[in-house]
Image 1 (cartoon, rainbow over the protein chains, first blue to last red):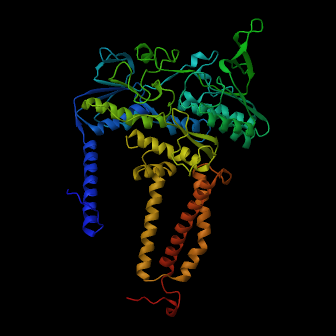
Image 2 (cartoon, rainbow over the protein chains, first blue to last red; image 1 turned 180 degrees about the vertical axis):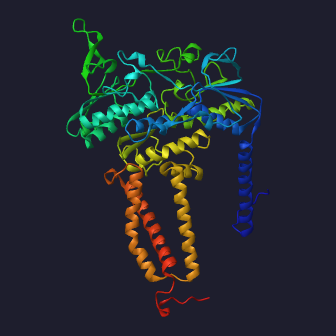
Image 3 (tube, rainbow over the protein chains, first blue to last red; image 1 turned 180 degrees about the horizontal axis):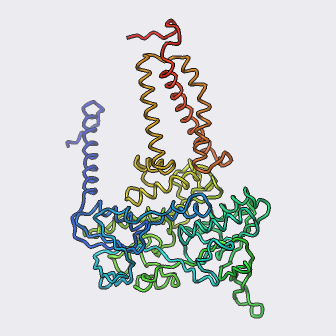
Length: 451
Length: 127
């Protein structure tokens, strides 16, 4: 295009300008079209785990790749919508609300092996299943979720859930349903409600608080009104990892008369006597050195969340961090790209990833496009550009009908999706509507690779 | 939320009301709208008498819509926590009011016919 010595805003020049802009626009569009075109490849991609992360990624990869052999390995036939557990455990949704079939979410071109991964060999690049199948891979995505170490709580076993005032909503939809059986009795009869959380990293660190708030709210309206007290015992020194949110929760606890007990790690329960045993830090009276002591707390209703760790197959495969979370075994990966630091053809996704935050479905939603980008870039022989900033969202339910839409990143910054419209630290009805009704639809869209 | 598409919005509404109920509601709303357009075209004018009744029905439509949404989402008026909630509530009420007005107008037109006022009161249509 010839250069003009001076720009005269004549109609002709304006037309030229418009044409030039159009050309740039068209170029941009071509770029987009090219990016959306499918890439021919014969790469073998194995995804361990068909939960939120594995399923969403499989659906997106199928859209992007032509000829790739994508295999998902997961021993559980049912897909759990885990954000629904809190609602089930408060009697707001039925057990079936969180259960669907894994296969129904997957495209037919993806192979689903209904067995668990038994062994991963990152050097030979193979995954062995419990049924004895051996899968070779070019790229591996580990997304098996995490395991709940119920055995770590002495005196407790899952068959106790729902009876004698014991709840454990993390254990699955059925247990969330049984948790409500125990919790609803408390909300009618009153007594001492004791809510706990573990010392390890955990999925959705807001859920222990949500359950506390919900049970307290329902009890305050129900038969237990004026006849109950609520206690929240946590191993940490704060109520939430993000300081500004922690302070807000502390204030809410204050206004609702929910007593916080910091530095309390649940170690054992005596279901017969209805007493919980907590380990607390204490100074040795004779030497003054740091020690621990055991504190007994009585309860009429207790909510148990056990320590959480990476599945055994991950911890045995040599994929875990050697110097971080050594008792928990999360996968060693770059916190921005989720790529394994020692095996570049391996990515971690979801709960199992050894990153500071992000064991929620909302994190998965933001992690999946990042893994997709870097995996496809690797197939094409280039470097990916997408990064994950630690985004996590927690619609923190504070009452039936109200929630705070808390969103934050690795740096503990609040990153509201709707700044100026939906305040993150305000208890709002609209945030409740999002959690109660809009979240599952968005989640389902994510599973299909659409959002 | 990083992608808000029509598909997602439809999925959200299916989730709120249940797939069957949502699409029945859409079908009913579409049918009423079509009938409303039908009576407008048939009569070639707005009847102010019918419109008055339609307007009188609006508060009831507003209240009904709010109570309906609250019932579907385990919510109460005391859950209103900030300005955006009030806007949300008014929005739902407004939709209910307009929907009810259209419904009442259409029903009157369909069942009471078009000539219930003297011809002289009807606006002149030019062109």
